[in-house]
Image (cartoon, rainbow, N blue to C red; front, side, top):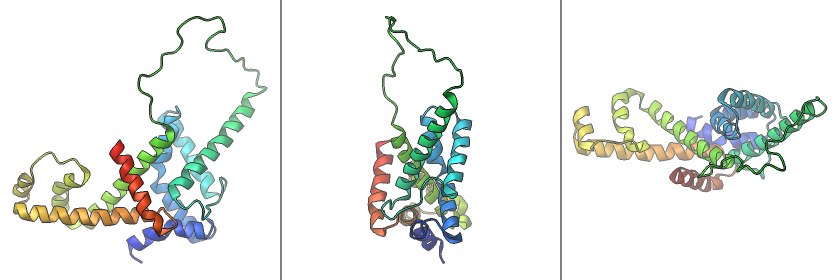
Length: 235
């Protein structure tokens, strides 16, 4: 089976088997490993430091793989939606457990501001930070793009120098003329333009395959891809 075919069947396999069976378990584990970064970003946005966020992320994914936060359902056809919903459910249980430990512990709760306090209070940021859900989606989008770029780079391992020179025209980091890249590579500017075009076409194919790996219904792939592009464009 080709890598692209494997990508397009991972989440479908998990949903169809409701996470049961060795193949579905491996597929779910692969997806969790691939999309670890959005979960950590969500947890960081809630006020945790990097170490605390990663520790809690590990506990969350362990719960997912053990089936402790609900099994995938056909109606929750996008892995992104399933993962975010499962994370919120996990955090709700985590907070409830933490609250139960605090109650009856003899700790004295002191209000930050007294009822008669006329001080102006805590300063508010001039520009609100993005909601955790938005940050999750943005990190998700960047993760998908990074995985597609890495796959494309692996395909061009035999032309590593050329790929490194032309990659900026894929990820928006180009800061020189294509003629300069042509001179550096010792090829014509026309050859550079053709190579960039081919890379872009192949990149879009890999990106679509990566997105398809995270939806249950292939018809949802285009919508999920549009959502990804919109999130990145708005960033």
